[in-house]
Length: 451
Image (tube, rainbow, N blue to C red; front, side, top):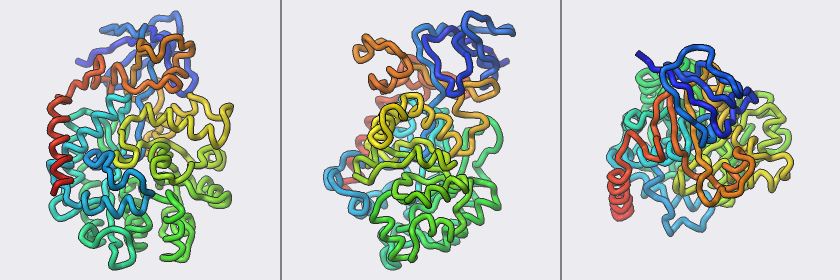
């Protein structure tokens, strides 16, 4: 029988919806059964008590854009100081050599690092399917199941190689029919619907400079037919904008509309270089944007106009992007960086710690189509929670606990709960041997670059 647990009297709690849960919350059968107001007791019997008097509790963070495989190519010297296009040109041939074992390890490392930072649901954009890696998404499903975390795995694709005027090497692209058949297979085999789903699948042609118009339109049609979401990179750099003008005779948002993507099924990675009219159109059509501050700063891509997009009606979430451009898979640090970068654009008064945490919780939940059951501490929502301690020297003298998480630089959760289960306890991942994983991953990273 399922045990109910009263997570009692937290030091602080961020519900993301202003509900009073200062007395804690009751978790049962993987969901939040009841919020307890300050000084109150649960209204129904419970089986266990967890005393949270030292814990700052927030909804489990949600990462809405990543490239798990890139953990194998962090801080690679040849691309440390270059912008996006030369960065990609140098890395495509390396990534094309990935083996199934390497992808499995890379996925586990990314998910482990994310989870230990307080992330409970992560979207990955995998678009590399060389001959030896055609079952890449199947490998990622198994890696996620082993860890016990939620994932949105997107079946990416590249179909526009150098010979057709694209950026990727020709041996990294696939035919459209192969892409569409595998996309349908993955949705049918793995996509879970309804509350509490642990695995979601989306369709995700990589970018305007790596896929044809035909695969973009066909993916939009298939996503509508199978009722799944759409994801791609868009408006990340000026180079990309110029590419769209040269290749298609269209700016990025016009291109998006021309292939049937300007709708609420779509969320975009980066979304930096939009003008005011384009922001209004994105908002009016309910398109979502994933802000990736570390990557955008590392590659000098620009600053996402988050407040303008939100005010126009778009949804905005947060992602860590790939570990070869952000070089980490840490979502609480990404929230901190989002707060500071957005303050440069909008000012300190407009961009609060609570705003940044909301991007990483309810914002990302909306992007991934999970606003009905994830991203909030509320009755009926999934019991996905991150617990932090403010007992390190960096927090000494801090006064507001929620602000301290970002201002003082929290980087690891004390505990993490997914679906009511402890996945991280006392800063230790419960489902994997981290030392062994790290040793294997380091060895494979060396082999990949030596091949």
